[in-house]
Length: 146
Length: 103
Image (cartoon, rainbow over all chains, first blue to last red; front, side, top):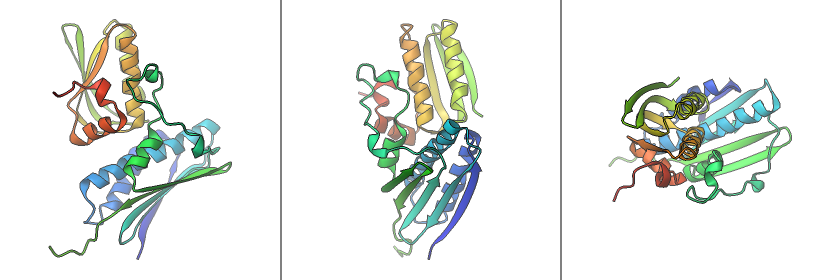
């Protein structure tokens, strides 16, 4: 059985902490999820939502961002959907190490690489009418008796 | 909102941060760093003991601060990292440039 929640937020940075708190609280309803995985999820969701907020800001869009969080027996799925201009995930070039000459000129570039490390699965579907980032974190069985 | 308290020691300024550093609060920290450098305080230590969350926007603020201080022959270092922050610094390579290295 799937349980879950849906949030719709204004595309404003001050809603980020609310999104993190709600998603992590929902995920923590599964007692089998370890604290470290909740931290991974918290950061990954924050990165996805930050990108969504930025994409609306770039357009000057007043539309809302949708965050869906679903729990199943073996996974937590979070979907962050924006209505921004979209981008081609294939065009994201990996950033070099920070001690590389000139690297400090770029303050960004960590968001998507971090999500790829933190989530067990990530799918990015992007088109002209918006982007949906799907993050999956696997959960261990919760009915072990030992 | 984040809380920022400052202490001046010799030629260093120590900033103790309280709260979460993200897209909403990062600009506040960036502005403070810019202000210190403009005032000639180019050696900055940021104590993250009371920071329980920082995302890539926050990391960007720290990188920007490092670049800014170094361009004025100063430095920026972070101390007081929790285990999860240490892990994040390691994942992004920030540990190599923003923290004292353990031997």
